[in-house]
Structures are given as structure tokens and as C-alpha cells.
Amino acid sequence: MNMKSEMQSITIESVKQVVTCLCLDNDLALIDECHSIIFPTEAKRLECFAFAFCDKGCVKYNIDTIPQTVTAGNCIIVSAGQVIDDVWISDDYEGRVVFISQRYVQEVLTGMHGLSSIFLFSRLHPVFGMSREEARNILSFYLLIRQKISETDHRFRRDTVKALIQAFLYDAGNIFWNVYDAEEAKSTRNEEIFMHFIGLVEKHFKVERRVTWYALQLHMTPKHLSETIKKVSRQTPGEWIDNYVMLELRVLLKNSTLSIKEISERMHFPNQSFLGKYFKQHTGVSPKEYRNDL
Image 1: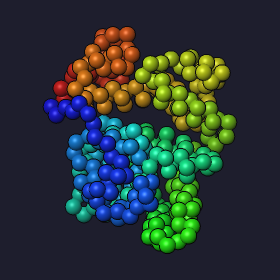
Image 2 (image 1 turned 90 degrees about the vertical axis):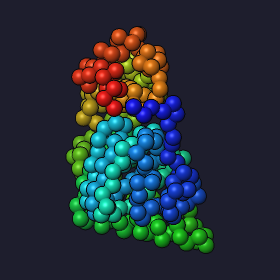
Image 3 (image 1 turned 180 degrees about the vertical axis):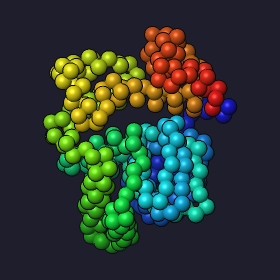
Image 4 (image 1 turned 90 degrees about the horizontal axis):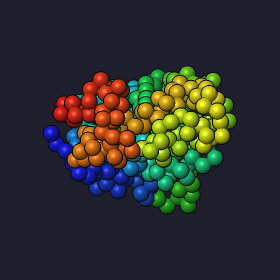
């Protein structure tokens, strides 16, 4: 079993060192051909956001230990913090990748209603298909962004690229919402609650896993919180919390040298036995069995 004490990261800076790409400082990188050298077989944590589009062939890999398959006409979104490993790319693969730094995503998304949830939903549903027309539209945006990044003497180059990225995200967001038929979940207030809830979960899931605690922080009843989160995301608050906890447990078991007892302490479980029961309840196997099977 190949275990690592420290996991390497994928950043725009590291991408620029290993593959030819067109960049806007360290905020944006466009790659016309994605090679396995970007995502080697060992686990790496993404420290930026990635949009990939498959034109031909097939790619298989794990995101947060969950196997994913991308084929022609598919789009994939990988969010900052997610772990990628076990990449396999077919010989006939053709596709493009857009890497966006966390700082630039925050800058671009400022004032853009409804798009932040794309990155949250994509953690559970990272791959989705596109129609030929949708794929053509995405390609058009990609090529136009590429062109404007290349115009280094353009007085408003950065502002123009930002506007194009925003338009690109709106178009990609429309595809995403269509795929998951979430038109009924566009209530501004409900989205705000969902975003605040996810923000709390991301900060506190290692310590706090009670839905009642999150409802208290949001000044809501547990029932109201559950109904709201289910309406927006089709997942219950408890399922979102468990997803974050299980994601972290799988990553720690697979890619760290921490003992199961140490993982239990890091994740604030009462004891190792409690962790074992929790993990087996969600996977059907014990943490030790999961680690030994890797």
C-alpha cells in the first residue's frame, strides 16, 4: 500500500510548469490538450477550480476516491479542495481544460446570483453531458477567452477576460441547471440559506455533525432547515454533513500515514470504535478493511 504523509497540490503555478498553457497571471490557465502529466496516478489535491471538456475519447479517474468516467460530450467540474488520483486517459482523447484560481473565482463570482451553488452541487455530481449545441457554445467561449488572453497589448485585457469568464460561467451554469432540472430551486432566500449552511458545514463538519446545531446557527428550526436544503439540493442536511465527513475519512485513510485512532481524534469522534461503526454504516466495510483493500 502506497501511503503518503503529505499530499501534493495542483495549482495554476504547478500546471504552468508541466504543460503548455495560455495564462492570465496565476489566475487563469487554458490548456488545449490535457495530458496525464497534469494528473499523475498519485493523489493530488486541487487548490484551484477546473472545468474540463471532452471532445473525443475517454478519461477515467477518482475524485475524492469516487470513480468517474468522462466521455465525448461530457463536461466536468472539479472544485478546490477535492482530491484527484488514478487517472487513465485513452490514446484518442481530445479535450480542453480551464483552471481558475480560488482568488479569481471569488472575484468573478462577486454579484453573480446563483452560480456559487454550481461548485457545491458539482462535488456530488461532477460529470454531466452536453448537447452538440451546448458543446459548440462552450467551445466558442473558450476560443474567445483564449484569443483575448493572447492580446497582451489590449488596454482592457483583464476586464474583458473577466467579463467573458462570467458569461462562460453563466452558460455552463445554465447547462448544469438544465441537466439536474433544478429550476424550482431558484428562490433567492433558499439559495442564501443553502450557501450559509454549506459554509458552516465546510468549517465545522470535523467537530459538529448535528443538524440541530446547524439549524441553531442559522436561527431556524431543524424542520425548516431540512425542508429548505432538500428543496434546493435534493439532499438532506444530514446527507450533506455525512458526505463531507465520509469524503474526508476516505481521503485520510487512502492518502495519509495517520493511524485509524489518529484519524478518529482528528475528526473528533468520541473514540475509534465509534468511528468504525460510523464508517461501516456508510460503506459496509470497516476503516481497516477499506484501507487494506487499497
